[in-house]
Length: 346
Ligand code: MG
Image (cartoon, rainbow, N blue to C red; front, side, top):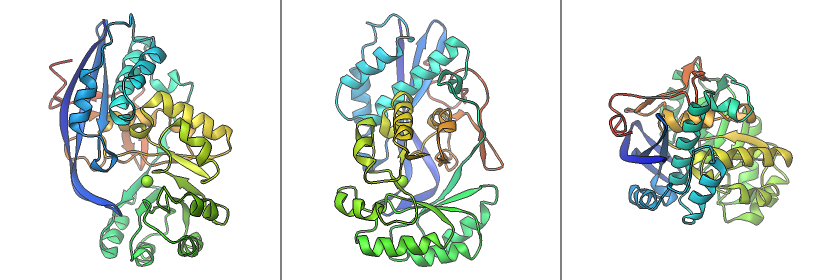
């Protein structure tokens, strides 16, 4: 019998995280555990307020889960289909079950999850994100992140040019830009992207609001930089439309409902010739490590959500000179720390 446990957990952030659509200094999580045959797998739902899920919605979803009809966790596809069919939406809490289930089967099979997905254990150069602030403050942070190969800059303000110039005053590193839907006029967006192309920017994430499809199609036909869909692309079924609006997509486990669908999204986007980015929310080392197992599929890695956590309840991928490095242990290869609320219940 597969046993499910969960606990609420508030992830505290070291710095206020500010983007063009809001700010916060903590993030509600629900941590899950699935146990079977002496093994326990861990998962996590991260629910930034902007995305519509809450601790309450996650808890009531988990209360509706009944795994007694499944003989073994190795019926992975059937279990995850059952979970997905329980209710529409709820991608983060669904991801928490998907991640825990994959951790569990990886442990049962005795292999790390990258091997389960047929991938190598690559060292992943992750970007470090600099959230919105005064340009001087953003430049000060950029200067401090010497270990990272890429910096991701949040934009979508009146002062975007000033921010880039301030950062360019302290570092020549390649930059990822994320406008978080913050630009509203397509002509102005194109002008600015042409300027960014001369500033060592690699790509631009979600320049326009997601409902501005026509403007986005206009922009993608003209942009000198790759445009990557994030808010516009949640699950596998969104990729067909996204392939005409963007050059690539940002896959996040908390949007995709977990690893299984993220893997299918990655292979589908690849088949369509699209670029791939792996991203995250504010998360613990549990969900970050989970996403990192798919790292070999991606062109660009933005898995830094755990680096700003003040109370990460797991140890997982290590950070070595700006690269994420797998532990090589079975499943996710993570360990709950003593203060993890699941330690005594799983
Ligand atoms: Mg984004």
